[in-house]
Each structure stands twice: as structure tokens, then as C-alpha cells.
Amino acid sequence: MVKRTSFEGDSCPIARSLDALGDWWSLLIIREALFGLRRFGEFQNKLGMAKNILSVRLRALVDHGILETAPASDGSAYQEYVLTPKGRGTFPILVALRQWSEEFDDHPEEIATILVDREKGRPVKKLEMRAEDGRLLSPADTTLKPRAAPRRRSA
Amino acid sequence: MVKRTSFEGDSCPIARSLDALGDWWSLLIIREALFGLRRFGEFQNKLGMAKNILSVRLRALVDHGILETAPASDGSAYQEYVLTPKGRGTFPILVALRQWSEEFDDHPEEIATILVDREKGRPVKKLEMRAEDGRLLSPADTTLKPRAAPRRRSA
DNA sequence: CCAATTGGTTTTATGATGCAACCACACAAG
DNA sequence: CTTGTGTGGTTGCATCATAAAACCAATTGG
Image: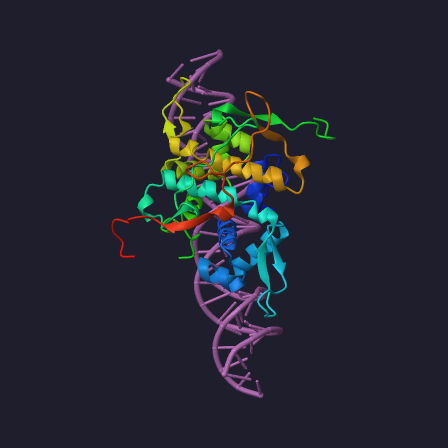
């Protein structure tokens, strides 16, 4: 079995996230879903991807609880794919990816859109990491700690 | 050409980011590099991945300007891979992935570590998106705007 | 009831991944 | 300098995933 090394059982939360949405299309599908797309054809059209792999990806996202299928909505007997709370929870990931590109891309002039505050129309600030008490944290201000009280599991 | 659909020319900044680090291993390599790993063998050992694909990934990350090779550092004539500023800039992405897993994973008890404020030892807050003036923004408070003044390019 | 659209599945070709074996070079000991 | 060992890869398959296109069933629309 040479599979694609699933990180499902890995104890690293980053690996576990990547297991669900670490492929080439899933985050783009979610991005479009956040934009309001719901139908198979809408995704296929907007993303220009092959229908078979869209089909596989949608099923996987549903299995992971990121999307769920809704019976209808516009009257027709077709099916729709809508984000669950877990799916909408990926928003910060998308923002982080976007901001990284905006900051470091070698050809920023090719980037078509910027994320702005709807009220003022001004770009949003970079994502901030803060401590519980509100202090702004840099990567160096953080560290990893073993999870507290793992009920069972010897070590 | 059945390639893996490169998003290099895409105008969506999320797609452009994914083009650089949207595969199964790159972000994990970066994660370890942020932890201080530098040598080929260290990565191979820690991640348990095949050496050939580690080799390919490292080269790709160097090409993307995320890692750079340093001649030595510990005396030996071997080579090291160290993060560039662009590479260190992925930190928020990793934090976002981590927090998503911490919040939504179906088996959170399997997560080994939590990210804490080094000073207090308390978990860091969720990443916050703020407007220029400091207002906390939800996804619904944001919108996408075409990039201003694209020098050239007809539309 | 006929035709087109939607929402897929199947088929086939090719690229990517994974494992194992191999190899070149550095370095250390004799 | 010669042999041995560890580091840092590359090369060969075997297998899996991806992509494009053809095909198909059910749903509309007329």
C-alpha cells in the first residue's frame, strides 16, 4: 500500500488539518463556497476543474464535515453543497494564505483582488496573534506545550 | 499536458499561495524548519518521508524563495536549509491550520500539543482579523475589491 | 414527448508519490 | 592512503491520484 500517507492519525494538529484540506482543490472549493457558490455546476464552471475530481473532492469534504448536502433551495430537485460551521471556520486559513501572497508574492501586480473592510473599503490588517491578556505575540513569543491531562494514553 | 494544474498564473492570491505550499509535505517541512531543523537528515528523520520526495520538495521550496541553502554552520562541509523571511512569513498560516484543528477536529484528544504564550504558558487566542482602525472583523464584515491601479493590463 | 441542461460516472493517459536500492562524497580510524 | 561508515542525495520501478474526454441518467424546458 503506497497510498498518499494519510495524516489522519498524526498527533500534529497541522498535519490533521492538512489531511482534510491539504490538497490542491479543497481550499479553493471552500473559497468559492464562502462566496456563495452551492451547485456542482457553479463550482465546476468557476474553478474550471475536471468534473470527476470535483465529484471526489466534494464527497471528501462532505465526509470531513466541511460541506453538507442540502436537498434543494431554489425549487429544483437538484442537490446543493453548503458549508457547515466547521467549513466556515476555515476562513482564517484562507485569509492567512491570501495575506502571505499579498506580502511575499514575487509578482504582486498579478493579484487581482484585495480583502477589504466592507465598511471603510480599506484593506484589513494582517492577522494578529495575541495572548489571552491581549498582548500581541510574535512567533518567538510562543512555544508548544503537551496537551494537558490526556485522560488515557500512557505517555 | 495533464500536469497538476499549476496555479502560478492565477490571479487569486489564495491559489498562488497554494501553488507554492499547497502540497502534502511543504507546510510540514516549513513547520519543522520553524522549529529549528536545518539538515536533510533531520527532516527525513522527523517527518519519516521518502528521501527522494524530500529532495524534490526542498528544491521546490528553495526555488520559491521559502528556504535557502546555507553553506555550513556546524563546521561540516554539508549543506543546510534555512527559512527566508518569506518562509518565516508562513507562520500565521500554520497557526490558522493548527487552530482550525484544535477547534473542529473530530478527535481533539489525539492532538498532542497546544500553542501557548511562552511568557504565561496559556493558550494563544484565536487569530483575529481587524480593520485598519482596530475594529474586530468577521468574515461578513469583509469584501473583495479589485486591486487598485493595475499599471497595465487592459481590464 | 423531444431536446437540452445538470450532475455526475467511466475510461484512459499521464504525472506524482513511495519504497528500496544504489551511489558519491565527506570524514574518521588504522 | 586505504578502508569503513554516515550523510545526502539520485535512480528504478510499482502504485496511486489527477486530468481530459466520452458517456449516461435524471431533470428541466418547451
